[in-house]
Image (tube, rainbow, N blue to C red):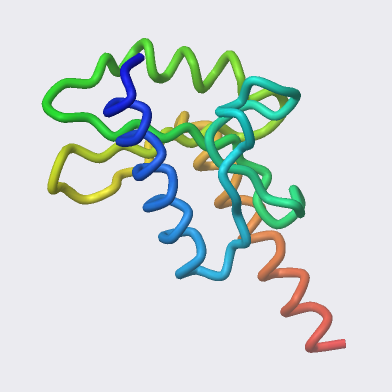
Length: 121
């Protein structure tokens, strides 16, 4: 991978980090581009806060979707996988397995129900 491509990838990771931080998630770039124990492009110090493996792809024109999804799947471990994708001058999109989306949604609903029960106690 050339220097320009690496720098573009780093800029993409920083952009996605900034989006997460807009929503109060404390995330950082993975050191050494995932070459050590941590895999993925972003991580949080509090995995309970964000049990998601984040893979970032900033592309010019074309993305090999299946290759990107396979990379995310192979590295996600027991976390939900999130592929963040943006074309040049475009908007960031997040791609997840349908089961992961539904599981996260169910967790949110369960938390809301627990809060409702506690408030009415």
